[in-house]
Image (cartoon, one colour):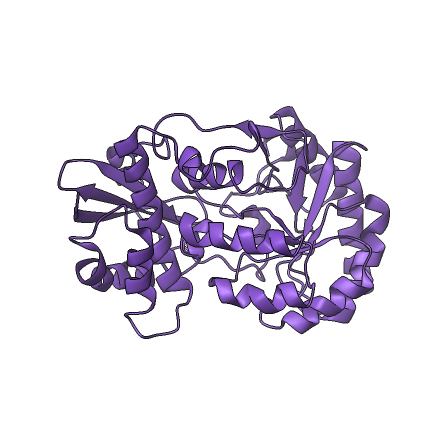
Length: 367
C-alpha cells in the first residue's frame, strides 16, 4: 500500500480555521487528520506543499517512524510548530488508514484501552460578560450538558502582572465558577503564560480556597526554570505543554519536576506516534498526561483514542465513551467544509474581549 494523494482542506469557524488533510492510498483507502493552527494556517499549507511530494507521496502509511524521520531529520532544520503540525496531521491520517485496513479502532492498535470512558472538561463555555453572575450561570449550563469539570481564564488581558482590582475581579470569577459547579465539580484555571513567577505564585495562593484542579501555563513556556520556581512555591498542581512541540523539550521539565501534568497537543507535537512516546516518558517521572485539544471532530477523535490507551488523569465524572468504528471512526463531509470557507481570523489572547472568541455580545439570557 502506498500514499498517492494528500488533499488539504480548510474550514472557517467563529474564532479559528481548522485545517484537515485527506490522505488516499493506491487501494482507495482514505485517512483523515486535523490541526487548528493558531494564526499560521498559510504557513502550514505552504509547508505541506513542499513536504508532501518530497516525503509523503509513495510512502507506506504503516511506516510511521520512517515518515517522521524524513520530515524531521531529512529537512535538516530544527522542527518547530509548523513542521510538527504537518507531521501530526499526516501521522493521524496514517493511523486512520491502518485502523481501517485492519478493521480495528486506533486505540486497539496502541495496546488496547486501560479505561472504558475518557474523562473530560469543558472549555470555551465562558463566552459571556466577565461578571460573577454570568460566569456562574455559564458554569451551570456546562454541567447541564453533562460535564463535571470546567476550565477558564479569568484574567482578562493581563500580561506579567495583575493590578489589585483586577486580581480581586479574577478571584471573584473563579469563586463564582466554583459555586456553579459545586463542591464535587472540578475547576481548572488557565493562565495562558501571562505572568512572571512571583505574580503567578501570588495568584495561585489566592486561588487555593477554591481548590483548582491545576493552574495551567502560569508563566510563558520558554523558561522551564521559571515554571519550576512556581511549582516549588504553590500548593496546587501545575500543568503545561500545549506550546511545546517537540519531545526533547520536555526533558528539562521532567528533570526539574516543573509540572505535575503535561498537556501535549497531538495536532502540534507530531501526532499520535510522537505523543505516545512522550506519555511513556512522563510515566517514568510520575507525571500525568492530559492531551490538549481545542480542535474539531478529527483531532478530538485522535485525542480520545490516545487517551484510552496511555491514559489521562481521572479528574472529572464527565467523560466520553470509547470511540467506535475502525481507524479514528470519523468521516469528513467535504461539502460541509466547502460551505464554510477559511476566514481572516487572528486570535489575540491579550486583546479586549478575547474570551468571547468571535461571538457577538448578547444579553445574558441568550448567551
